[in-house]
Image 1 (cartoon, rainbow, N blue to C red):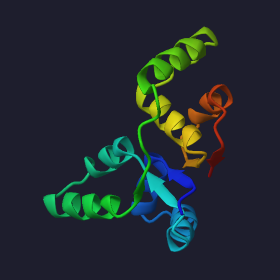
Image 2 (image 1 turned 120 degrees about the vertical axis):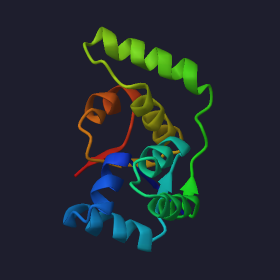
Image 3 (image 1 turned 90 degrees about the vertical axis):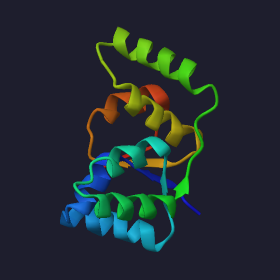
Length: 130
């Protein structure tokens, strides 16, 4: 059963063969602990350089557990973004929906994106930066 949502930044490093990402994500995949969201899959798959790579990535992401969109997602994203802006943080909408998806599903978010550090505090997000 999945319990880790792997963010696009981690997947990109994984597919580029960066040792730390490969080691961490391979272990999670072997234990069937990895989840994705449609937004993360779209971010990664759309970066393919060829149609063959696109099709391969799309197939790999379809095989993963997919988290549902959070309940009342967009009003919550708006409120979270508003709150963070009052603290001087201009968070990206995609990052916020990813954070809420992980938090609602009680999944840890595995990422290399440091923008999630501030979001994690506001969204009660279990975050693993590597």
